[in-house]
Length: 400
Ligand code: ARG
Image (tube, rainbow, N blue to C red; front, side, top):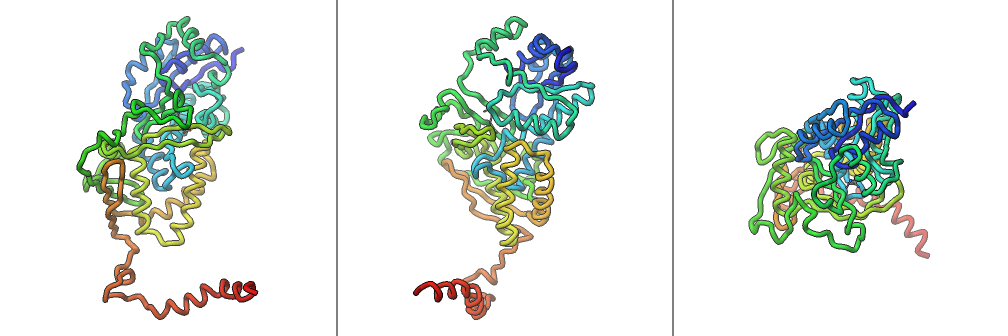
């Protein structure tokens, strides 16, 4: 008896996930492997991937275009939450995992599979995100992770694949490990493992080096409705279109690179490079439109929620009750977060130069230093007396 009878495998077309197919069948006694490749805008032709899975021994090869849901249900939720892990990483890879898990579970239910599988190793965050998301969506489905157990080196994996007709990668395989989708690219390993080593320019694909950016700025206007980005330069766009166009113009000006050492859930520190042009600028702009539309106390309180929210996405808890509860808070705050933010893109900087909203709480009569000033200056004196009273008392008692 094998570990499972029928398995739906998350498939990328790479050597590791290809080798998973014969491995599951030969070593773990699986009778049937169905592969599922998710199109999340990685900009790759998925047609050949479909063929490749069948050649590697899959009985069914599914390709799902999930870009629309990826943007609407995952990326936009993270933007409404201004979610940045450790204050920097906008979770471009992390957000894709719960969606892929959902597709796997749906396919398993449809095809009557008793398990799903993925090609993650035991050192990363992604295994946690897959396993926990799958358990949350259907706790009766087993999760198999061959690469977590097989203990083969890169060379051994390729050799194992060759025995089952899986072609050796043609080009000399890059030392980098790259994950890519519509939101960005995550690059790690190889020379980047030394945190002191400057990332070579060749690793970047979505953002230009400052030396190659235009000598004239571009201005972009991003329109928000209830916290969701809906337009670019006055033109209403689908989420996919908006992110695609924004990636282009923002990347052209060398904006959107992150080089950081982050703390993985499994206790390891790792050096990661990200290119996330549109996503980073969207969070920056969203924060700014919130500054017009939210009261001070909601805005300050939300900061704490945002940090928790980013952490739970990173740590694989997308389908948790905590996430659902925080969504209740965040969605309530976004009811009136609508308006337009204007940014200037130039030489690696995205600078916000203007914002406007019909729901703006900014009150010129109160803010102005001019003659139209409506603020009651005398009221400040009594306020400050009461506000400062505890400090005054403390000082009187402790000065000696
Ligand atoms: N460290 C990031 C995360 O946990 C990205 C990992 C992406 N994988 C890669 N092969 N670069 O979300």
